[in-house]
Image 1 (cartoon, each protein chain N blue to C red):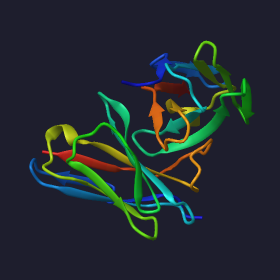
Image 2 (image 1 turned 45 degrees about the vertical axis):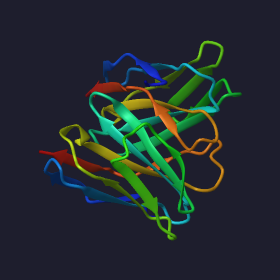
Image 3 (image 1 turned 120 degrees about the horizontal axis):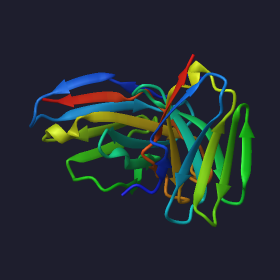
Image 4 (image 1 turned 90 degrees about the horizontal axis):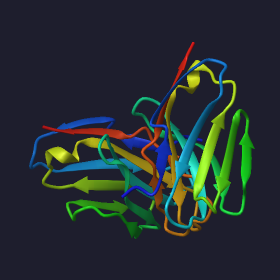
Length: 115
Length: 111
């Protein structure tokens, strides 16, 4: 089985621009979560999607948004980029509807640099 | 704020030695998970221990959980250079789809 695939792997953007990151979960997985990792704040939860619906959202400004498609692929978008948005963005997938006692399978991440 | 606090922040040992990492958390949990991250890459799931379990083993890994103290430990026995990585604990509060990560322990295993 192919793992979680994130594209692109690296991205450089200018302040004020917007960016879209993509995540393809493991085949058959229907839940996708997004995390931001920075040296200062560590790993922080952005949001979780299941069956095209956002089920949970972290404490991030509205510039951060996401969506999930019918094939479970997910995208996250960051508008009006700020220098502080530079981070490793990680996507994780989980098998099904139940959130109880399930491990998350992470992709390799997208390294976003805002200049 | 982070749910999990890990100790130590950094650990350096010789190959063949054991490595112990500790994690403390603040609120009641459904389960606690440990992940490994190699040099800024993706996270790899190591082990999940449920709140009603006290100890779990997987190969050279041993995890304990003390819910009364709100703490967990990860023991890696007979460490190898390939174990060099950052290790994170993550708490699952149950039915939220959200993991709350600690700041991580950076482990260096010298050959």
